[in-house]
Image 1 (cartoon, helix red, strand yellow):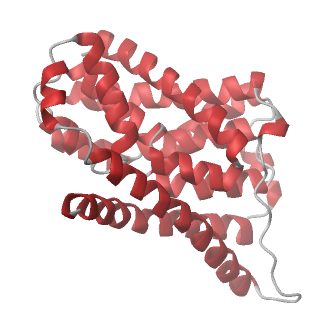
Image 2 (cartoon, helix red, strand yellow):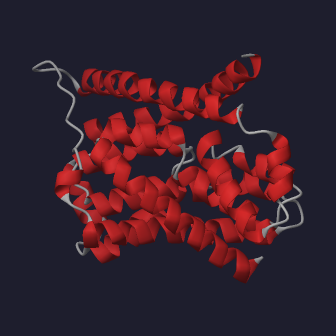
Image 3 (tube, rainbow, N blue to C red):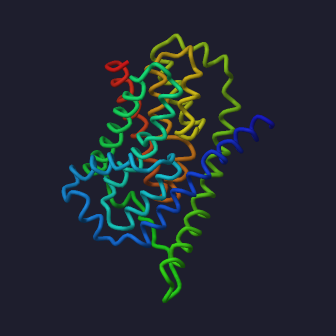
Length: 285
């Protein structure tokens, strides 16, 4: 119980500041940014809008908890879902804070920073393109605009939107953190050491561990660096999968875009993230 409570509190405390940041950005976008802004900035063709949105993830210094409400706000403002999802996956993995943390965690190995950037951006763009090709509007529950009092100022509308999204997303964060804590205490350390010598098993185990541990993307590089018995490629899989698919992120996605979206988007993202990370790791590492 002590270990469970420690992991639960740690996940919540790690994620909460960035969740607040994401909610604040989401409220600011929905309140102060006119819909025409996105029509001017993003290319009209979805195939071009997806990589532009993915590269735009560099500007959001937060974790995956922050990217979900921001992506929801982008969809609410008329941004194509494929572009919003590319931003959702790229922002927590390629922003400067995460890349600097990765460089500090792996001193003398700049190739790990480059491999993480390339693989994470590739996953985001590929998932955006896959959604634009095969995604169905019926799978997606569009985030509803937050109701405000008639005649309310923009500051009041900003406060109402932030309060609504924080309460809504915070509940799913707690559910995800509880799931991560429960699974984390059930995985014995000796199991990890036993599979580190197998290339296939090490990749699959670290991918699964990234999903269940739900470590914030600003901190996951230090955890990966501590797994010295595993290869660099398998640790790259851990770094790419974590910000794209973990239990708290899936819970937040289900709360924002609906369960029908989450049960389809998360498994495909996991498969794409593992394959891309292994491919990039074999080339760059």
